[in-house]
Amino acid sequence: MELLENIELVFRLVVQYGVLLMECIGVAVLMVTTAKSIWQYVHRDPHIRLTLAQGIALALEFKLGGEVLRTVIVREESELIILGAIILLRGALTFLIHWEIKNEETSIHEAHE
Image 1 (tube, rainbow, N blue to C red):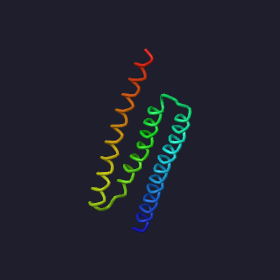
Image 2 (cartoon, one colour):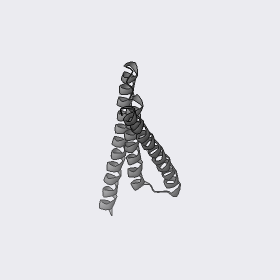
Image 3 (cartoon, rainbow, N blue to C red):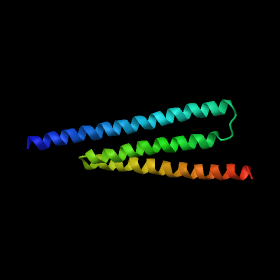
């Protein structure tokens, strides 16, 4: 029985560090995107909205991945409900941002024709 408890503890730690890693990557992507967007703004780059939307979408994907991974170690129903709501909100944001990216790409493409 002690072996199973140790295996569960190691599994829990691996998942928690995986969640932390994905969250940190999401934050790093967002910060790099922000810096890049500020640079583009200073240099009056017309594609700043597209760059910013793509970076936010990628950061949200990492954050969403972290939330999905977190579901593996959830033990209580209330935690699962909260986690489900977070996943739905982040999923909706990701959908809206991808829609914005598609519209921005279309307008850039039409401007070049």
